[in-house]
Amino acid sequence: MRTQDPNIRIKNFNEVALGLTEEEAVSEAKRCLKCKKALCVGGCPVEIDIPSFIEHIAKGEFAKALDKIREKNSLPAVCGRVCPQEDQCEKACVLSNKKIPIGIGDLERFAADWGMGRQTRDHRPKTVDRKINEKVAVIGSGPAGLTCAGDLARKGYDVTILESLHKPGGVLIYGIPEFRLPKNIVGIDVDFVKNLGVKIETNYLVGKTKTIDELKEDGYKAFFIAIGAGLPYFLGVDGENLNGIYSANEFLTRTNLMKSYLFPEYDTPIRVGERVAVIGAGNVAMDSARSALRLGAKDVYIIYRRTEEEMPARIDEIRRAKEEGIRFELLTNPTKFLGNADGWVNEVELLKNKLGEPDSSGRRRPVPIKGSEFRMKIDTVICAIGQGSNPLLPATLAKLKLNDDGNIIADERLMTSINGVFAGGDIVTGAATVIEAMGAGKKAAGSIDQYLRG
Image 1 (cartoon, rainbow, N blue to C red):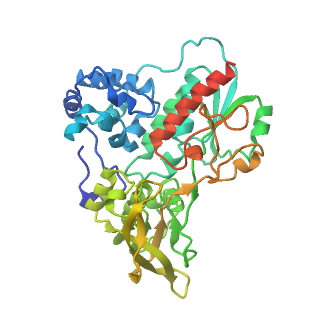
Image 2: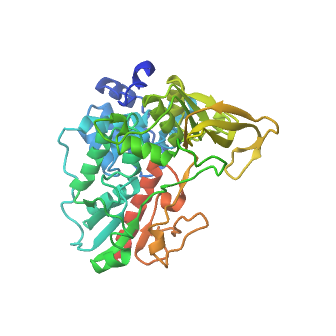
Image 3: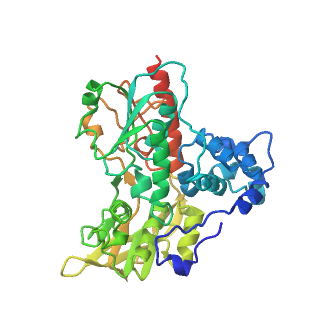
């Protein structure tokens, strides 16, 4: 897919990937082998009929392609941009053996983008097996919550999403930068879910605005907790409380949801120095580093304790970060932050590593090299080493069982220890991908339907 020139895009927050033309999309779709056993479908957590929508594109039937996708997926414009297709549907494609799988994600994005502003058929259910009056509350409007709510609405339920922030979308709206996922794109997919009949209430913090027990008194018969994993992890080293050290959650929320990159049009500035160190190497780290560059930093470093081979970020995001001039300080770990007399960070002490035997993650464990300490001048640090479960909502449910990491325990149906209360996505699994959260939302919708039908 064509992209903005790196020398131009580092100076703006416009989308990097430019999408496919109709001719490019048809040409790519025609490469599909139409396998009798479509392994790609098995690689999709939301079970999109991939061969069918690709065949429609190959025939130039773009509206039918989008309709086919939306039978299973209410967020195609989002998924086409941020899902790791290379590890899922495209990895399962038989052509991947030759290193050239069908660009399923690019084609999904094309169909979704083509449909923007065009009238496609109405997906709201015309009839249901019986009239369903039960009210369902979905807590959180991220990918899991939106998917669950959309699927339940299709089945005829009265669904309300309760969102704590002032805009719906969850991590899609506060966590992923504009240059990778434009917010108007998220808004279009959110509007599609609303058009299915889903109501969304924002600025509604379940556990504080009302508890789940109080919502039961309001007539809600089932609940789906989809609040994600929004509690940032820190390193726990000396100096981490200095000014100029952000969690990636705060940095990206201020940049994306609060639009600090549009200051002074939006009165939410964020301080970014000339030399920025981002700790971690997942997608969140890449997003943070590339955002810092666009916010005016001159030198941005990814500091990672393993090698590039072990990086959890998507290959495309690593490649684009390199194209933009992000520097990679690998096999390196921070041990201390140092500051000036005013309390602002100005230096980081680092320790070199070598790789040892694999740990519980399956990746080779970094082993510190004694005496390899060195220091680097920096004036901003962004800690992007992961996040855990926010305890606010679980703390209001005495009978809710949690694991040792604070995540909600759910059974194979995604039912929690409280009857009628389901949970899925990052709050159950820990931080994962958008499409995995959507898969959990789809599964929860089926389980809630079975539960309410007795």
